[in-house]
Image (tube, rainbow over all chains, first blue to last red; front, side, top):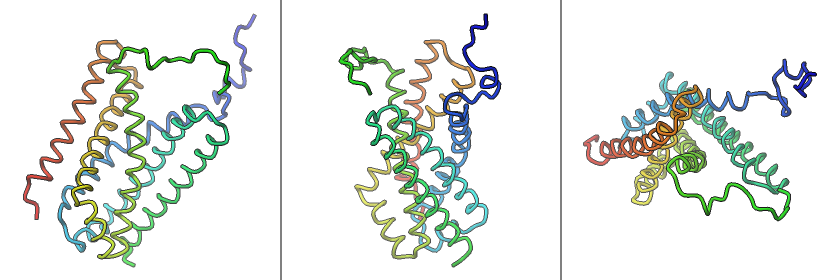
Length: 128
Length: 130
């Protein structure tokens, strides 16, 4: 007798009951790996700008490579943050409506903040 | 959660505190604080885009005594999450599961965070970067 209670098709798809397989887990790690490099570069950039005046800070932010890496940092950082906060909320918020509301609110805040950051970088990089 | 009246697990209040549980709890706590910190990064970037006055307000608050204390705390918070995150990536790859190396790597995350924070702020506070 087959002891595996899972449908063979479900097993082959490997998506589990949430229908997303290991994508949450994997994306958390891939963004983590990217953030190791992006955050260390960011800290190095900030340290090189200590006590810099406004014009220097703006010119640095507007350099193409810096702008690209900053946008990568912003997107990766907020994706990683929402994935992490989601797990914490799912683990500790046991009132269902509060859990769902929190999950939606952190995603709204993350998207708005990420868009704000990207727009700020683009405004400086494109010089408007 | 269903209110069954049965005792819940784990019983944090009767556990003997061990560094492994501290490192795990700290990873979540520092992650939450970093999420808040990411908003500060956006604030800084937006202030540069907005103009000299907004940037002066931002650097004024960040450079005040209170702001500096928060920045130092944030640096420590960040470096702990970074060090322990690298530790988690190594463990996800299957490394370091023996109890002794688990304990050792927990301490490495904590000590690493303190050392990196000290290095960064020694540079910030003592260097002459005008």
